[in-house]
Image (cartoon, rainbow, N blue to C red; front, side, top):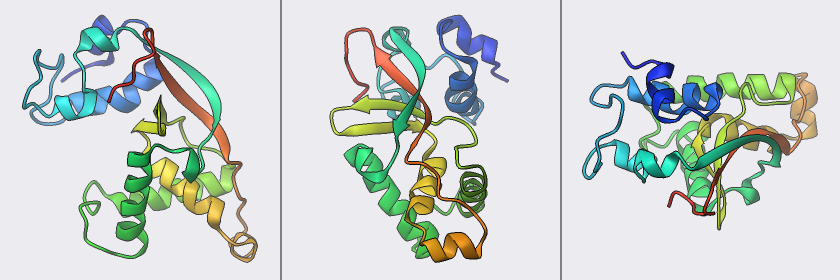
Length: 180
């Protein structure tokens, strides 16, 4: 079993919350492990990290308040949100049915409409087209849906519309590069 300390041996300056949310759960999935192979060619880590650990060592994290509304997301993140809408709201079978997605979305929707904020700050990397989620799609999708709820529905369910700006983890590479 991979521990936070295993990952922090390679990424010592990364916040525990970022490691726990994003890398730890992935490292403990079947066939993953830590550290990722170098080169990662053909390994599942290649799709998630896109660069070797040496590149990620030059990434720093800050917790910031950012506008997380749909138009502030990257093009790919907007496509993901649209796909999640089709799967979780319209019931289309498009690959988001696994991972207990509907239950995860509903749980996050309850949290964001009752508290007005994310359960945990999503892990984001700003790229040219907007904010790119590394971890937190269900939280961001629930936030997106809550922002669109009618005043009548908010009153009916006795919940609140969250602010568009939320606390998030923002990644910055020392050379200004993005993970794409």
